[in-house]
Amino acid sequence: MADAAPADSRGGRGERSERGERGERGGERGGERGERGGRGGFGRGRGRGRGGRGRGRGRRDDGEQAWVPVTKLGRLVRDGKIKSIEQVYLFSLPIKEYQIVDIFLPKLKDEVMKITPVQKQTRAGQRTRFKAFVAIGDSDGHVGLGVKCAKEVASAIRGAIILAKLSVIPVRRGYWGSKLGEPHTVPAKVTGKCGSVTCRIVPAPRGTGIVAAPTPKKILALAGITDCYTTARGSTRTLGNFVKAAFIAIGNTYSFLTPDLWNETVFTKDPYQEFTDYLAKASDKKSRF
View 1 (cartoon, helix red, strand yellow):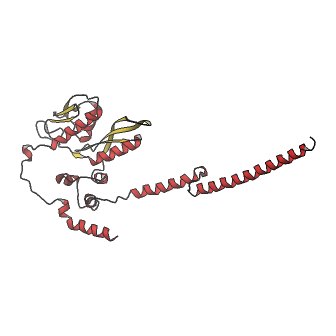
View 2 (spheres, rainbow, N blue to C red):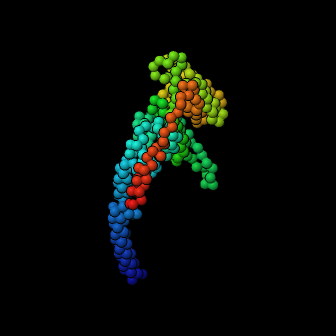
């Protein structure tokens, strides 16, 4: 029994030395991982690697400020060949880039109408996303409506604003009674329908204000209409359909001809035909590079 005690003590010392070596190896590995993290590798590095990638994203955001159009309309707008958005509406040219609207209508204001969660049943459970309704307008005859669904509220609002800019339409305004001053109401009774909701807008005398529910009142104010009566039927608590019905009704102001628009139309070349040589040169330069 006396001979066994020293052997146990030597064994304990051997185990301690092995543990020490393992600790040194672990320390070296930890240092290597820290260096990788500092260089932006896949190591942990206490967040230093992610910080490097974050700085790269900042540089990319700075580059997004320089808009490079990818459509013919975008190139003509950027180079100043098309002077106003009314010229785009005249020839019914589709707008595919929201920067075009930013150039023509810099004073647009956006209003978040509603944010509602929507769910989809999957095998793993329920997937929840957020649906945003955003109205946009300059209170001077231009209004748009965008609907976007995304995983995050901020992403949904941002996407809805972009879609609202792409859907901006002109609003025709008129008078009630004598034609004095600026147009202040709708030119005639107009109706819009979406789902079960029907929204009707009726001209009103100057000074009446917007007699409407809070939902259509916001979009009518963004359109630049200051006086009107409204009626609504159907399930108006479904705010999405209520907003769409009001937007369709506003868009219908330009859907019919009134006697003051019966003048002879002078047809001109559309921008694509007028600047066809310029667009051809731009495409040749792009193909060379």
